[in-house]
Image 1 (spheres, helix red, strand yellow):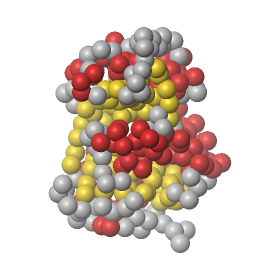
Image 2 (tube, rainbow, N blue to C red):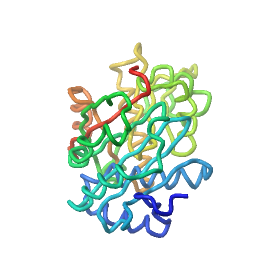
Image 3 (cartoon, rainbow, N blue to C red):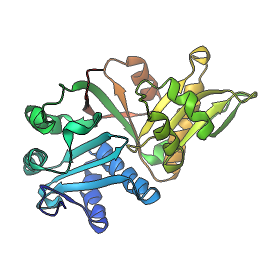
Image 4 (cartoon, rainbow, N blue to C red):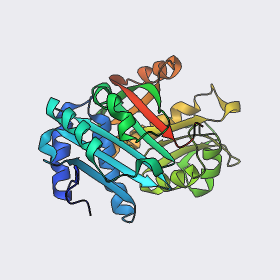
Length: 289
């Protein structure tokens, strides 16, 4: 159906080569590398999902890659380019591709693209999105810490509490306070509990008070402590627990922090995290919500 499209699917055998181009470019490429890695694992567990890694027509040697998943009328996609030619090819291929019915998606999210990628997409976003409502643009900072460092974390569970896996029965509570929830985000949280994983800190009575995830874009995410339990170190416990588990699985850890959130920046700096790059989030809905 899309054999002549401007964006072509990267074969399983070529994904290793794409990751091979990205790994030496750490930390700038860390989000693209682990997002792709996470999507590949997700596709193996849920083969019926619309998940793909794409490149411009001439293949990954153009120096660009585009990757996405689609669920419940929502497109989540991102891109990375490691050459000037790749940046140009990325812009042209997104203008020309017929793969995506841009106007039909209720939500489109382009998370954590580099400033260089955004600079070539910004002038053409209205054409790419085919006159959807103007997207919301936000700025984040990405921090990272290699696997060999996070495995050194000493996870200290407070007396009388337990650290455990997050399971389906916890999804409702997590979703209810997640700032980015949608009408279907609870199902995404449930899926991440077994496609990737999450860890929660529980009181002796079973109450869940803090949690964190190895999230779908291959990073630490959805970190939260319930409001009446804050400033007791619970967030640090779940963050270190998820980071250490990621490190033990051979995964370097990265995360993004919203612009101006100096408290979180200081928290992660104290844990040893270093600045990786500044990034842009692009989000658009069919309605101005």
